[in-house]
Image (cartoon, one colour):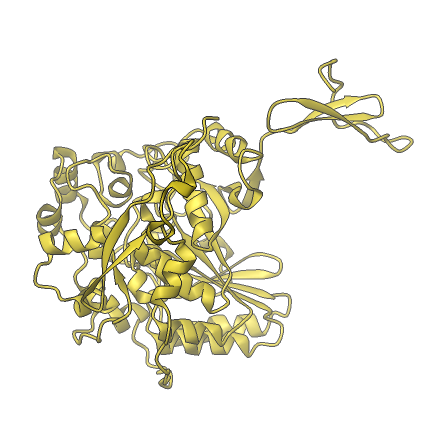
Amino acid sequence: MAKLSQRAARPIEVSVNGSPRPVSLPLHREEGDDADAEPASRRPVSLAQFQDQLQSNYPPLHLATASEDDSSPEEDVAARTATDAGDADFVVGPQAAAFRARCFPEATDAEWNDWKWQLRHRIRDLAGLERCLRLSPDEHETAVRLGDRLPVGITPYYASLMDPDDPMDPIRRTMLPIADEFEHSAGESEDPLNEDGDMPVEGLVHRYPDRVLFLVTSFCATYCRYCTRSRLVGKTGEYHFNTRQFERALAYIEATPEIRDVLISGGDPLTMNDERIDWLLTRLRAIPHVEFIRIGSKIPCVLPQRITPALATILRKHHPFWMSVHFMHPAEITPEVAQSCGRLADAGIPLGSQTVLTRDVNDDPETMKRLMHALLRIRVRPYYIYQCDPIPGSRHFRTPVETGLRIIEALRGHTTGYAVPNFVIDGPGGGGKIPLSPEYVVGRDGDDLLIRNYEGHVFRYPDPLPDGAVSLAGRAGSTAR
């Protein structure tokens, strides 16, 4: 594989609390560049240093008592009209600043950094799309035709990362509908993983012996076009999330001592208000046999302003607590995202990434390698690459499985092991995650196991079979070393 070559880091200017501040993101130098040629005072800071500059002196936190009303979690956030004070210490990167000046010139720093303002000003219709993007004929016609099957919703921050003139921009492709969504193919299903078939109570999927998936909302800050739960996050979602539904799910978990691991998902759980999140985590943490709590979220990527010091403090109370964060492309790793993930990591929360392998977005080894390296730099461990699930109208997003295998082979051995995620297919019909890997066992030759390394060389490992055992691998030729 060719080595990555990126532009040398250049200082950029960001706005913090209305004041400009120069920082540099840690990009790789061109091969052969002299690292000592640049004076120390002008060298790029690391992301850790960058985060440290922005995260000092968190204000004291006063938590409100959780409300147990029966309104839906999404109504708690999306329908509010009051504006919270924006996070005064949150960075505004250069892309966001330029986009805001062009599309939301009336927004102040405080408003832009208020996550509820971001939700209320999501781009949700044709007029909003046309205000911020130059739509292709396909995008324009599809936005008119789509209706309520899967809503469009893009936070202003996340829209700022899109190329307004390029329909093939990778982030734009994951957010804007095109006519291919109306083409349904064999094998596609509204519920391809049969989650509904493994629900002992509404909103709780119990598929694996010791863990459950707890769906707590149908609301997302942004709506991904390839979403596995498109049936759930449409404007007429089939579930009704409220405290009574939560109590039924909690009662099932309490009555099932085999459950030690709870993954909270949706929708996006971090769109709920702080009090509801704290209440739910407190209830789960009070169940003696629940050892491990996780949240799956795209919020740190698409609405990084949501990761406030107050939220980080709440989550830190409930350790051991983990988070799986959804990332798709290296262009998503911005100063804002670095700060949001830094706040979570500083709260002691292990972060793992989940990426959906998607055609024309991240389906080549170089893009995936840049994404995995960028994630490690912001303290997110690459965890899963998923083969795209066969929801209706997703054929244009799905790649051959062989593409994923080649990406893993291009990563394994060619870069640090921490940058190599697991490639999995979620078995259609409820089979669960099935890991796939390139074949590194070549076969056997007598008492030797023949194994292939990342360079393609075959080596012998002494591994005599026990008496009577049958070899599971065929005999190989003389290419072994």
